[in-house]
Length: 220
Image (cartoon, rainbow, N blue to C red):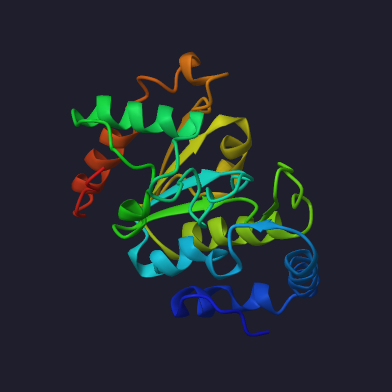
């Protein structure tokens, strides 16, 4: 089936789009958007892919679910639109980023600037009902995004995967760590960030690896 997504991803994932589960997922998502308030806006469901073509992917950050509050989600994991207050996990990510890289805290929680540099900001589930966290889990998105992770692992070399928390960490089984760098830490949420997310220095480690492999580091 035809899915409106950046063309390199379209080609790489066409076998997924043609599978029965994805057709069922599309029908479910269409019905949800027609009958409920769903985030992100429909045109931004594939924003992570449209902002970061497969050839450009240097780093993958994995989240679980889009934000379910009005005006927050825009298709990039952990990121919010300009002018939206920082959710707690994003605030902690930006604190660690600033501390690790010796930079001031960003004034906006919009991480589009990272996506534009080759950071794939991928949620495991790409849609959610307003005010209902996890409401679109188990509908097929995870099958699709697992295939995305495996596609990156299989077709590329020297990508950095940042896996925060147990859910993301479990995805390491999809990644060939003989040709990619997999970095794990506790989740940046306030419940777990002090158990090792703060001080993990994943951002500087990612850049050191990219430089070693001959790639441009990310301007975190």
